[in-house]
Length: 97
Image 1 (cartoon, rainbow, N blue to C red):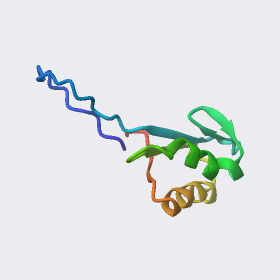
Image 2 (cartoon, helix red, strand yellow; image 1 turned 180 degrees about the horizontal axis):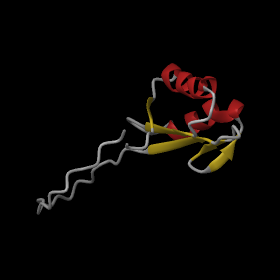
Image 3 (cartoon, rainbow, N blue to C red; image 1 turned 30 degrees about the vertical axis):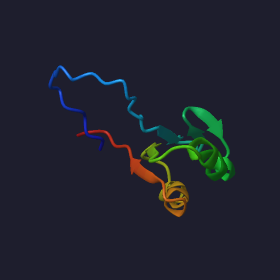
Image 4 (cartoon, rainbow, N blue to C red; image 1 turned 90 degrees about the horizontal axis):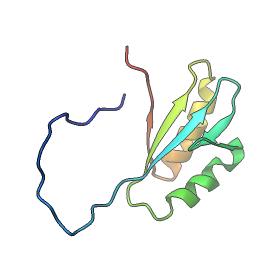
């Protein structure tokens, strides 16, 4: 599960330096085994190359894997293997109980 940020309202000091935002990439697998990266349809065989293009300039990219609960685990593992092979951080999105 993903952790929600603090709900405290703080008056933060200002700075001219820009903070770098981490890019989050969403990969989805539908129940009919269709793959999407950031809601764009993609062939399973093209996932690794597309991730390399999207992540090439990122310091610490994060991938969130959304999958229908009926999807066979082999499809989930293929995507996770791509992430591990390329040393990308990946988390599996879940719905809270």
